[in-house]
Length: 114
Length: 219
Image (cartoon, rainbow over all chains, first blue to last red; front, top):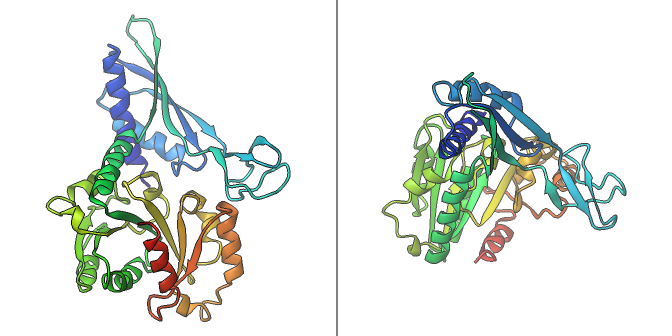
């Protein structure tokens, strides 16, 4: 359960970005979270509300886009999403593949401010 | 709501970018000093400290070794490891479930990094949280004891996925635990098809030569 640490970093960088843009209130926080980011969206939401309290992010909505693990298969020469992040096999040809192109994201994409 | 119109600000930043930057700075410091740094991860009780004890003892015969040991509380592990003669420091996280780059940085103060060949960072026993935090290491080693169940990598794919090396530990207990080596390998390779795996026992010394040779290749 390190979502509280993650939420603290999130609020810190969001607050800095909002202030730099001259905003006084953040209303929505857009986040991208990969399936292998080791962060649980619900736990992050819970922690975020606590950490955001008393800052210009207080009451802001956390919009989380969850990203599946995507691999590049050198046999199919194509990218594909893994139905299960525990099995690194190309879902098309079933061959093992280690090349991950998406799934570890933990990115603050944008902020809606006023 | 205020009467200021709502607008969108583009940020596009990794949430842990501050840790990433600190870790990058640490890696540069380690490189300048010529010390290779290994981040050791496992669940609690997988045998990190025991393996490290044996590693420091053997490696210390020819190389200059040091260790930072992370735990929620107590300095028991640091005292245990210090018996090997290596430079050892405890990081008590006070409840934090993982190590972060700033904790590593603050515990390096006063150490001449150039006087070490290898620095081991024993992370807090936890297979989830430490994964997200780069500590400036050159290699990430994940331990998995024969007593833990062969499917551990499937339960914690996020951690095994990023292992540069998977060390199977407590091999001397394999028979008692009815450990299935082929099943364990299959689980590891399922999340990391090109994984390097070494089976070890700090007690009998099995696999220690291979493990030390792997470490030497980091230099």
